[in-house]
Image 1: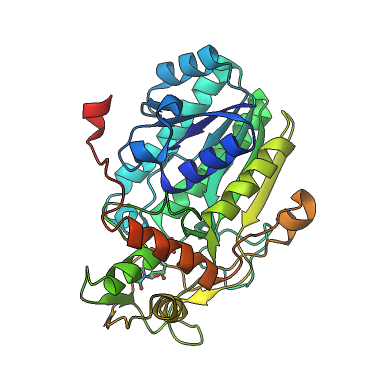
Image 2: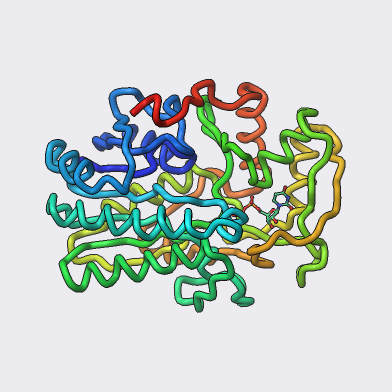
Length: 335
Ligand code: UDP
């Protein structure tokens, strides 16, 4: 299957791209390298470009005979979405509109979309099924929910098969230590805790200890990227031009910030100094998946079901790549 992977040089996109190659599919990554890494993708499978460039996308899809799109490219920082919503609305909503326009022109009629558990936001019902009410509590989450609706409306009007995948917290690294999480700036919990363990930061800021959770810190469902990737492969094979589907991708187990820190201390054998801080704007108290539908309908099985499994792979990556990927070059220089 010839698949265009937007954001294919990013953390989750590149993990999916590698999995697609392993499964015998024929993917091409399309990425502006603003957040992604050239080294995360085989050179012959990367096209550098922006999803705002409708004409470039359409001609690439026609030239390569693309049959389906996996759409990962997006602005993803929750905190930044609060301070700079323009960037998120432009990238996520206008960017997806550009992609859907190009897909219509190139007659590509199947897609997966990387949505998020953050669209459930303040919903207190746990774990969250796909039918849970969507109550997004950040501009980031609102852009993702708006795109879900955009895709549904395009599917009705113009014919498009889609599967919406609502991820919980993507984490972990490749088992062989070759690929892992490298964001700039890094804002995610596990890599930051591991940086403290490495002595690259003095302490870990804990954003809020007064949430309505057992230990007062936020609860998240950390799912390994390899398990996310296998879900994408199952989903794209099940997506036909008439599919209208949605799946959660999460383990079904939630861990608080304090529990994640404890798992990191156990795996690294190092103590993590903490700094208790105010809540971070836009954070939901608890987000835990009910992954039953993905398991029963698509036969999804996890390789890394526990927080310890996830942290062990992440720690191996951090130890072998303390500075992350070696390729951070401004996008303009590569275009
Ligand atoms: N978090 C924290 N300190 C940090 C980074 C994150 O306490 O330095 C918390 C954050 O408030 C959230 C959880 O860890 O409750 C997971 O945050 P992350 O940014 O990894 O993922 P998100 O849930 O925002 O997608």
